[in-house]
Image 1 (cartoon, helix red, strand yellow):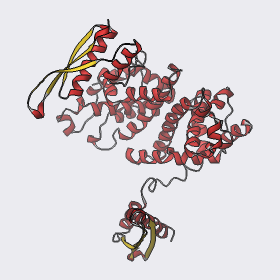
Image 2: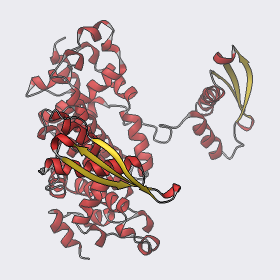
Image 3: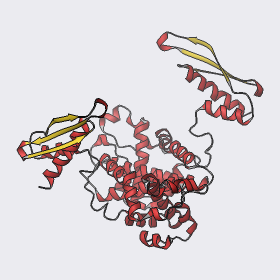
Image 4: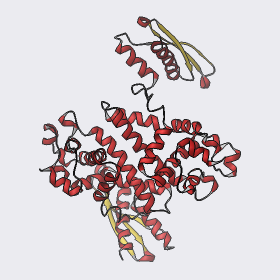
Length: 223
Length: 223
């Protein structure tokens, strides 16, 4: 796949194209690979996201800022960024990884995004890295629900009903099925005052409650 | 204590002195305090140390770079930086912290160094933060023993004797004293081929062995 398209997507053209190539090279290929660039890029991403959040949310505590940042730089998020860039098409993988579908593996994709950021920083400096990260995270930073990020559904739901001065959600196990080591739980979540009743399932009681809370929260906030 | 002296020491003069004041203000004072700046400064320090190490050690793996960085940014190291700056003299503490000697507490000193870095970054930008960190870490980065950092003395010593193709160090408990819950161990470490014999003590056998290994490593490498 011609690298020009990738440069166009991230809106950055490398002075030293070897850096870009190295950023895309998985360790399964040998040396040089992108591991050192990933180390560098991870710290640059953390720093740039931190400064963005610091300026964007002047009222948030450092604990809340940390939570938001953790959400934005975790593997799942980076893998989403990679998919947006079609990064899998550009990966340079060893034979084994190629055969086993490494170009779709979230951890490899996420690491490569970090390596790419490291390469931009080395090639173009801090300000260009800020710009590229703004492009990669376009939409994500702007549409962040700062209050909801990183909280589990039960906590979110509880905070929501408390803000409405309602009684806490009630969770009831409706059915359990399956053998002892492979049970399935179905749980109902009810908030009578808000006329909300939802169901959830999971392989543990707690998992089923979270699932039900998620559905209830959706009902409550999308009403 | 006049802040001019501190600015002189870190070789940076703030355009907005309120940022410096905020960086020095512990949460025990109330709001605003330095907690958000600490969040920011921590990530900037991590990033700048990462790029320094990346360039300084082109052969190290990302695992080794991570280990070096962890060593350089940990609380103990930051507290040492703070002591070099006499940062305790400038801290703005609430009454409780003041009475309990907060200006000497390593965690408060370390957090304040990070906040100071965050403040420089906001006030002067990335490049000035790089310069200030180079000043704060002067000598530490240059004299880093990249191989030794972060390893415990027994591991270090073992690697050393292996590199000399000698037999492994022998540890022997020489004496134990004290009551069962408050014992003291004395251990001898011997490497006959290198004519090394050292002693160490500690409240556990393992601690005493590490102490003896440290002394032996010193003998071996300063011979």
